[in-house]
Image (tube, rainbow, N blue to C red; front, side):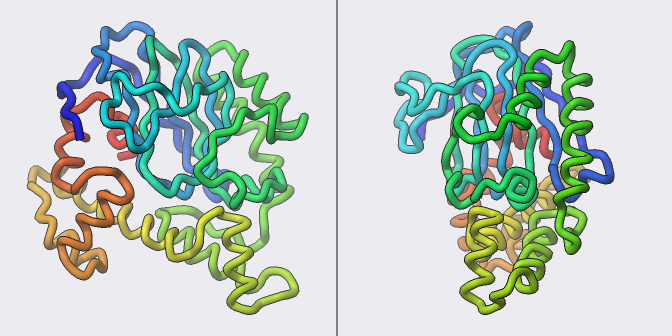
Length: 294
């Protein structure tokens, strides 16, 4: 894999947590603005891990493009897909890299997949590893909402509009058994329990089918991502306390067979081994998503 010039810029990133009544529905809202930042080409890359979340993205200024997962050079490879101004993305089973050819300002709403299913009726399993223009998948109510956010006067107003739209809709469509979200592991277990007691059929096969329709991914994959997320936050806590993560200890405390197992899982989800990922989060502009997620 090619090397990148490390270093952080003065680009603006923000993360908004949801209102309490939306904590079952959305994970948060991320914003990035590079309009007034002097960036190198490699700093205009964006690295994302595999994730069970769905996202709704707006590009207010600039443009973005998805790069092939097997690209040998992220800077010169032609894009696999050029994004429109408003895009819905399903859960990702592998890490992804996007590129902004120039200055940009955009926002991403991170939604729990089962919540999106209940609010829209979309079969999330049909959205896995896909980026879809909102006009091709959302109903008129949601499209009006998307355009309203696109034309809002500023970022705080946009986040208010997002939550004002979602809150009554979620309260009217949410399942009674929905559990508050703390980490992916908690959510996955609550989802499995709800799937097991929902509907007429309660066999193992029917439960698994229901989970995949709601979340897009099988329970085994959801648990794996949850375990990796827990290991990620544990290593960050060690670093924030002034220490250096000991990967064998992180592996043991999070249920991995050994350090090699942790390394394989981390590489599968992020594309990088734990130590390299740790260093890039600290020093590489293109890993802003990981830093803002802290």
